[in-house]
Amino acid sequence: MQKPYFEEIKIGWGDAQYPFDCQISDNRKKDFIIDPHWHYYIEILYFLSGQAKVLLGGEWFAANKGDMVFINACEVHSIIAEKDIDTRYIVLKFDPEILNMSKSVFEMKYILPLTLGNISYQKLFKAKELDFTVIPRLMKDTYREFQNKNYGFELAVQTGICNIFLWVIRYWEQKNVVLGTGTVLKEIDIQRFGRLFDYVDQNYTQEISAKKAAQICNMSYSYFSRKFKQVMGKTFIEYLNHVRIREGEKLLLGSDMNITQIAMAVGFTSSSYFIKQFKRIKGVSPKKYRIKGYK
Image (cartoon, rainbow, N blue to C red; front, side, top):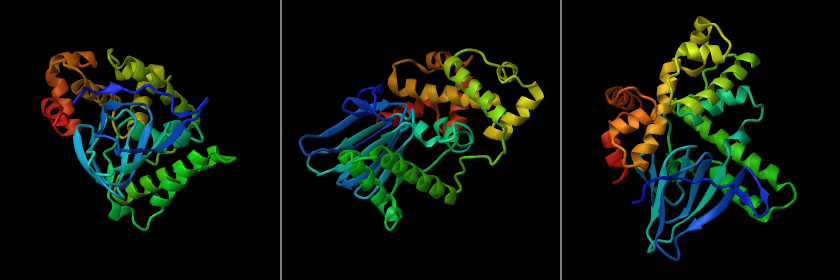
C-alpha cells in the first residue's frame, strides 16, 4: 500500500467550481483501490451495492450495501473493493464552510469541534441503523440534484448536505457524542479565538505558550485560560498537543521518518512526550498506530 498523499483538488463540475461534489464510484471494470490520502473537505460514502474495506485513521472498517461512512476533514483514509463483487457507492464531498451559515456561533458550536478533531465519534453507520431514516433518500436525492443540475440545484445540494449533517450530529448526540459545550459566547470572543486557531494551524511546529495565545486573543491570561477551557473543553496546551498529534498521524502513515523525527517535526521537544500524548489522545502508541495503518 502506498503512503498517504494530500489530495489537493477543487471539487466541483465543469468550468464552475462549487464547494461540493457528488458522484458514484464503482469497481465494475477492475479492482478498486484508492490509496491512503487526506484532504480538507468532509467526505460521506453511501453504499448502494457490494462491499469494501475502508481505512480511517489507522483502523479498517468493513462497509456493505446500505452502510454509510463519515470521513472527517484531514482524516487519512483508503478504500479497497475487489473486482469480482459489484460495489457501487455515492461519494458526497463538501467544504465544511458550507455548514457554517453564520460564520460565528454555528462554527464554534458544531463545526470546529469536529474539524479540529476534538471528539471521538462513530465513523461507520450500518444499514440497520439507517433503514427507515431519511439518510438513504437524502443521499440519493442529493446525488440526483447534483447530476441533473436543474435550476436552483446549488441550494438543493447545500440543503441536502445540511440535512444529512444534522441527522448525523443528532444521532451522535443520542450516542452521547456532544459537539458543542453549550457555552454562550460573545462575538468578539469568537473572532479572537478564530485568529488563534489560524495562528496555531500555521505555527504548531513552533513553541506557543498559553501566555502567547492569550496575547493573540487580546485577553488577559486568566480570562483566556478560563474561557478557552470553557469553550473547547480542554486547556490551550491540550488543544495544541491535539493539533500536533493530528499532524503526527499523517507523518506516521505518510513518511519513513522515525518516531523521534516525527515528534520534532510537529513541535514536540522530546519523543517520550510525543509518545505519551499520542497514547493519551489516540489510545495506542505511535508505533502500533503505524503498523495498524498498514495492515
